[in-house]
Every structure is written in structure tokens, then in C-alpha cells.
Image (cartoon, rainbow, N blue to C red; front, side):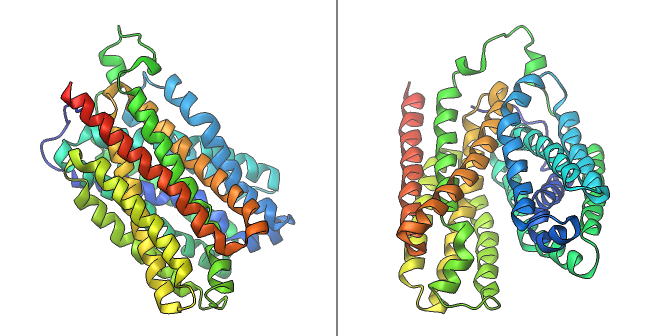
Length: 399
């Protein structure tokens, strides 16, 4: 389950390049959510049509990530990673210059292709580039880039749209993704491609010995993301209706969510230093996350306790997500890593879509206060998957 690393010293410059790239690409993905009103008014379309741009992006990832992993396996990993960011740039240029909603929709499909390609490679790339004792630190850079996109990137988009034209936000993202591509080109350490090194090996993906364990853990990712997103998209109305925050003061617990997430990725780096304990730590983090969702609902009448609970809930998720990503890469054979990355990003986007959809359906008959409990039940399914994986992993090692 390990492979030779391509570096003997921690590649700080390369990892900063990857972290910056994650920040730029995640900000590009969710930028419309921060500029929704101005985009809707300028293009003369409904608010839901602008919101649909995020859904189209996610749907493109779901439909293309796995096929891309199978059709691009012979190409240079570094070249593909840079190509994926170039697609983000093309998407941002199209969005900045678009005269119509329809062309904006096409730009999101192009960006979704880049997104699927990037995430199918990025985690496997870091795993191959770093020896096992440094991989948790490598995943810290990935998680930090994504977390900063939500804490800084999205509010920045909203601010730009408020003081200027929304197209200027996409123009800024064009510059950032060009810079990200350049940083990857000059700073990223190339990694070997196992599909070209063993060109005579024609075994199918599903016959890979690590495939069953990877598939099991990918199902866990789906349950964790789906369970969390049964509640998370509705957190603002929950805080307003149940915890009695105002539309203005609700920014405080949402900021606490970002702070908890930042602490969580640091905790994840510590917990990920011993790969043999990953499955145990994942299960514990999921249980913690589920407990915080339930506790948030129980203490919601106290705004102070609600702020603390929401920060701890975010901390649990920010520990779980990078550990699951690291665990999947540790379990994967070198030849399966890109496919495993594609499966993981597909499960992630399916979890977001199905979780928010089911939460919206259940919201009407059961009320918004039921969503934390229902989401926690699904999360416990993810914890069960992690424990099953731990038992199977131990059995495999014993044999």
C-alpha cells in the first residue's frame, strides 16, 4: 500500500503551489454563490438559474471524473494537473466575457471538467510525491487551500461584486488560475506514472487488489458528505429560526464555522501522522461530528452555546475529510490512485447533491429542527464504514 516517494526532503515550494491552486480552483467553483444577486440582475435571469450554475458544475464532475481517469492514465501526471487548472482559466475567461446566460452555463461545464480532472490527480499526486511520514502534512496544504477559499475567497467575490461588476470577480480568478498553473509548472516535482512504467499490465481497474477496500471507503465519503449536507445548506435559516439570530448576526456563527474548520485541518495533520491509526481516527471524528450536530440542535436556544457547537461541528468535518482522503490513497495501489481520486470526488459531489436534496424534501414534513438528527444518523453509517474498513485492513495485514 506504499510506493516510493519522489523526494527525500519535504517540498515546501511544491506544496505551497498545490495549496494555492486548491484555493484558486475552489474559489472559482463557488464564486457565483457570492455574486448571485448582481449576476441575476445583469443577465436578467432568476436567482435559481444562477444557483443552478453550481449544480451544473457538480453534475459535470460526477459524469466525467471516472471516465477521465480511465482515458488519461497514460499521460504525464504533472501535465494533466496543469491542464486541469488551464480549464479553470478558460472557464473564468468565458464567464468574465460572456454576453449571455447560456455561454455562462457552458463555461461552468468547462470548469467542471477541470475540477474533475484536478481532484482525480491531486491527492494521488501528493501521496506519490511524499513518503508516508509527510503525507498528513501534504494533505494539510490541500485542506488549507480549500478552507481558505470559503473563509476568504467567497467573501472576496461578494465584495468585488458589490463595489464593481461581477465579471471583475471572474477576471481576478483568471489571473489567480494563470498564476496557479505557472506555480505548478515551475515548482511541482514530477512523479512517476505507474501506467507507463508497467505498460504490459492490462489488468482492469476492478481486478486491482486494493479496489474493494477503496470502494468501501469511497462509500464512507459519500455518507459523511451526504449526512453533513442534509443540514449544512439550511444552517442559516436554522440559526435564524431556532437560535434566533438575525440576518445580520448570523454571520457570527458562520464565521465560527470557518474558525472550527481551520483548527480541524491542523488536528487532522496531527492525527494523520500514523497511517495505521487512520481508520480509527476517522471513525472517532465522524462520531464527534454527528454528536455536535445533535448538540447544536439541543443547545440552540443559547446563542453562545450554538456558536461553540457549530465551530466544533465544523472541526469534526475538517478532521474527517482529509483523513478519509489520505486513507483512501494509503489503501490504493499506485495504479489505482487516480481512479480512486476520481471515485472520491464523484462520491463527494453526489453526497452534496443528494444530501441537500433529501434534506430539502424532509424539511417540509419534519421541520428544520429534525435535520441535525437525520444527518447524524447518516453520519453514523459513515463511522460504521470506517470501522469495517479497519477490521478488514487488520485481516489483510494478518494474512
